[in-house]
Image (cartoon, rainbow, N blue to C red; front, side, top):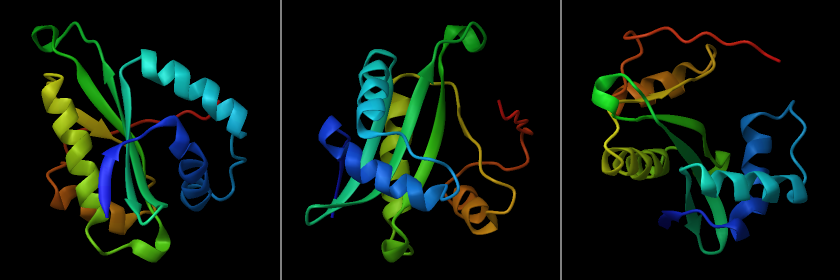
Length: 144
């Protein structure tokens, strides 16, 4: 298993994982995903993926946001953390999260935040086990 920075060629595998993450949501087409990918490259957004043999089995992305507080240091937002259901419990989530966190540190982020669905209690325990504090802030969400 390898964890590496995602490339455009990984998009089909990432989109497949997103169907596991949010099965009720319609996926972007590959062409739509390529447009997003090209924008993400310009906006300091990095995808990290885990690959086993040639199968993409985990993914996460971190967006680095410029910030005027915290002495002008940016902050990171991690989203869309997913490990293929057949590979869960093997440490892959931790491995890709460590890569995203390491990237945030290299970008001099003052903090990294993430959101998780209220019902995903196992995910919350996982995030807390790697150092995230579920009690520090409250996230609010507005579906548009």
